Every structure is written in C-alpha cells, then in structure tokens.
Amino acid sequence: MMYGTKAIQLVKEIANGEKGQLTPFSSDVFSEVIAECSQHFADLRSLIRKMQEAGLDVETSKNEDHYGQLIHHLSLVRNKRCLMAYMYNRAEILRNLVWKVGSEIPEEIQEKLSHSEKEYFKKHSEALKSYMSRVVLELAVDMVPPKDPYIKVRVLDDMGEVELPSDNTANFARHSMHFLKRTDAEKYISLGKMEELTG
Image (cartoon, rainbow, N blue to C red; front, side, top):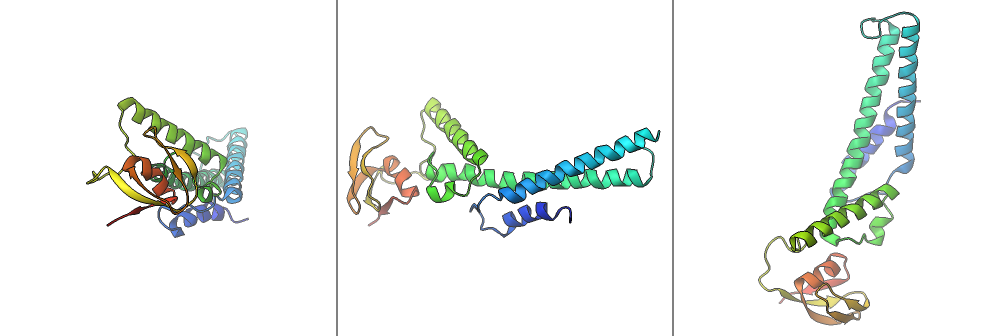
C-alpha cells in the first residue's frame, strides 16, 4: 500500500476543479485517508510502547524505531493537513453559495454534498438569517446599490402561487412577466427560476 496517495488525491481534486465549483464529495477516498490516519496512529503508539519497554528514552534515542515514529507522525500530520484543506475549500464554497442562492440548496448541488456539509450549510444559513433579522438589514442583496428598487422579470419555471418576502403573493406561471421589488426577485434569479429583463 502506498501511503499518502489518497490524501494527495483529495488535494488534487481541489486544485484541478473549477474555482468556486463543488465536485461530488469523495466519501470513499475521505474514509480511506481517515483509516490510513488511524493506522499511522496505531503504528506510532506501537513504536513508542516498544521503545519504552526496551527502557529507551523516546525523545533522545536515535534508533530505527525513533525514525519509524517520525515517519508515522509526519505522515499523520500530512494527511490531517490534506483532509483539512479539502474540507476548508468545500466549506468556503458553501459559505459563498449562501450569498448567491440564500438558504435553499439547489438540487444539483445538494447531490454533491455529504451529510455534514448539508448540516453546515443549514446552520450557516440560519446564523446569517438570524444576524440579518437582529440588525434589520438584508445583506444578501446586491453589493452595489441598485438605481431602481424595482425590476422587471420573466419567470423561467412554473412556481405557482408564491409568498414573497415583502408579504405579497404572486402567481409565477412560466414565461409570465412581473414588476417586482429587487429583494423579492433576487432569490429566484439566483436559483435560475427567473431572469431580469433589461431595457
């Protein structure tokens, strides 16, 4: 077995992927790296125990067991860093996604997430929503102030009767056009269910 190849595979997946885009969570490879970490840890403990039983000082003795410990320790650290880089990168994409699509994950993205990532997205969305309600400010709208608070939109998917954030309701039939508050339409535009009409 070649140690380290699976951990490197996770990092390469991040490096070779399109920036800001999620690939399906590599649960099999991730589990194999965790198992490899467990094996390194067990081997490290075994070597320490062996040296202690031989009456050798673990920190100062420079025999083959000492160097074996060093290899297992450094391999453990390398794998841990690879796992953390993989998870951090995916978490960063999810945090950015909250700003684009709101608290609902599109189906095509949801299929690519692990259970813990779905939980993370949900909790991050809830925390952001809670903060915005406390400060009474909608942070997820345009970062540049719009010239007009209302926009004209065309509905791309039939959504039926929908209650809008401004406490209005509207019937969003496919290809219908509406003049809406930008804050009401943003969520549906980012989900690809509406398009803004300009001009």
